[in-house]
Image (tube, rainbow, N blue to C red; front, side, top):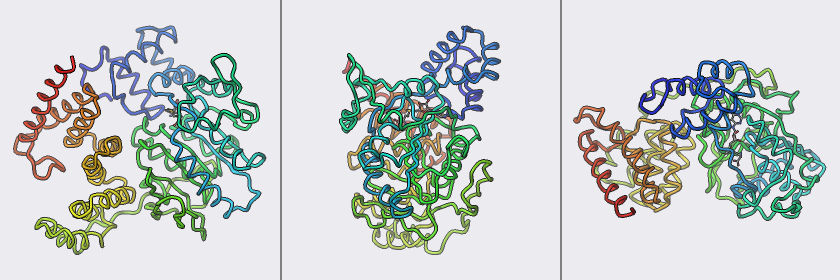
Length: 490
Ligand SMILES: C[S@@+](CC[C@H](N)C(=O)[O-])C[C@H]1O[C@@H](n2cnc3c(N)ncnc32)[C@H](O)[C@@H]1O
């Protein structure tokens, strides 16, 4: 944060506040400085210290309520009932039967919504469990860093906005209309226990707080706010909080986790599910009865028994082989001469290597773009830190006109490599095509400044040999086209 361009911030105090928030809550630098400054201004005013950064920083250090109040301004508490219904379908069709098989039919199911905001997510999970006959066999917890959101969750009174999802109707039997609002029936409300938790703090898993031995964790649309180091630590704690055989579901835009803890990764059409394998038990999803899912074994090996607080040190990822594997050169040459089948075959045999996986995807893209998208998603889940695979996935999805998915993939590439000029350029295209002209301008500007900072003859990363000077011209042409488009819209 301290390295941010000074013109973004009206006062250095904002940067100091955001540095403190990054250290205490692991938040990424805000993507929109003006909105962040407004939020900080509001929080400072509520603390009774408008414009007094020195005093406010001292209060932030010592008073967690003041810090929590600020976090609410810097993250979005948006949520609604049965958001991403495919996640709930997966739990019903795959996870619950699998847990029954593993633990027996009478075993209570332990569920945690981590970053639950105002409660719609854990209440949806409770309703799902009621629908499935787990009335007396469920333990559902919701935690969040926002005490205000937790207070709303406990009151459990909701407006229509919380019911905007396509499957929110499943809540209706448990809601009583009172004027323009709906009160949740005690039958559901009393089944969910709420508590404060800052995921960035090393205070969990914790048996005494009930945050341990979970069968199902939903941690959706929270990790997206956290910086890389915090995501890594949180992924390890989430793994440690799962019981053996448990499942973790993250949000569609959340960063990939499989490189950070020994999760088995289940790739589905709609995203990735993380599984903590139980020795000797094969998850039912192997049967692929309802979902075209693929199960990929853990990237990181587990060496320790399931920990409860205090948390043992997480095992480091095993070193990746550094030598170029035999055959990769041959695959690259086949790709260069346009022999796609040969390239795909040779590189496909080396799928453990992310460079080879990218060669295989490039070759496949020329044979069958849809198969290439699937292969790329699978390779990206297997090699979650491989920027090239995320970028290729974005390119392939763009080619198929699947713009929101392409945007998701390109954002993941940028999460891994924020200075990837070609990815900013692509994000600009995607935003323009989806009508977000100011967003497109920001992305093109970012690509422009990254290219302009390089000597013109420097090859640009992942730009297929394109040099910085030439790419700069391309980006500037895009900006000119965008200006013309904006004028037409005025
Ligand atoms: C967009 S909401 C997600 C709500 C719900 N999980 C969903 O997907 O609908 C993000 C929530 O994450 C919470 N949050 C952000 N940083 C957090 C942290 N470090 N620890 C715990 N919760 C955090 C915010 O307070 C907010 O309520």
